[in-house]
Image 1 (cartoon, rainbow over the protein chains, first blue to last red):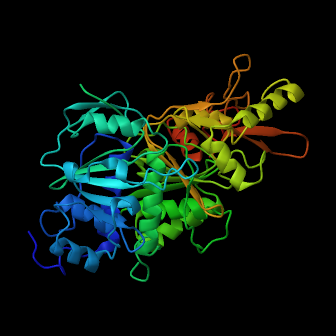
Image 2 (image 1 turned 30 degrees about the vertical axis):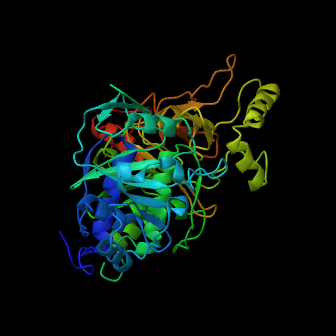
Image 3 (image 1 turned 45 degrees about the horizontal axis):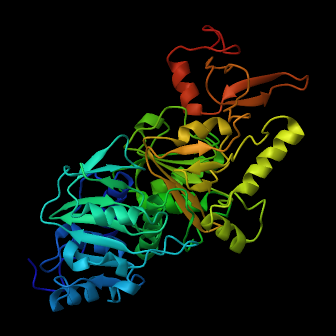
Length: 189
Length: 287
């Protein structure tokens, strides 16, 4: 997709990041709702949605973990130029990017503390497809029930059991974005 | 417009605020610390709400700002102008037309929809602060879900006054976990905290952001034998005749005369435009 680490950033950062944030806010506030998020491009295998999310939320203050498969020299160079986030292992990460299997086990990421549950990692999970079908989601942000093609219900249920601690998940595919925060109850449908 | 970065704040600051907002949404009712900036207005004038709004606005937004329900008071007018100038966005006074509404101490009467964001200005975000001044202790109390003290306070109200006398900033429990201060809205507005809109709370001086996602359970604290009641003045609006809106009492002479009017100016004006009349409405030929 891109072989040049110097391109793929926002042309108009204040406006593009504002629109991207609104998409992310809407997705996280309404778990299961699929939003379109565009503006950024990063080298393969990073999706445009994930690249845009990184440009919108990450900077030199947010340690980032690149999971195997996403951790290549091209992506590292792109992150260094556009974002400047320190690259770290799972235990120190505020954000992590990768495919589901590469991010396992999620127990390696910080889930916050009882007094500061916000000091927990946000995982950006790249999927081949993202559709409003599959696991049943209920909880804050959902009027009755929503459905989302999440990879593994068991892991998300274990994460919910930690509430108010836990991890927050963004799922990305091409330019599509959805989210499952720790507050969401996930069940097989 | 070209003199300011879009929506005033620099991008690094907006990213920091946006991260805090997202954690707030993920943990409904929990107060996320954030590095509040100095804004070109004093603390107490909505610096927290302004920072949250600035982090959320997009150029397509239409912003409404209310102060105690009114669109035309100093605080509301100056914040509206601030964003007109620094973000170049459209503004409105009509609740139904707004995509982002920043509010000081009221929730609009008109039900909000799922494409709206309500941003609250919050003075003291910690509901336990007046019971326990130490931040280290209140943080521990939230961590342990130790909210007995709050019930003692409400009980003391009953012991002293015969009913729960707390009439604004009435504490709520969000999604069965965190006790939260809904900002100093009248308790009449508490039932509206369960909303289709995204609700974000910003406390600038106290450096906290918190949130209620749409359709989140928000329960006002009470007792089985003293259930929560959303109270208002027992009158109808003297200008539009509305019987179920929150009212301001206005002294109109020095002989004890008074009138009651809707605190939500847009709601009241819309009703009057539809032909509703109240006790003190001017006659049709008075104009």
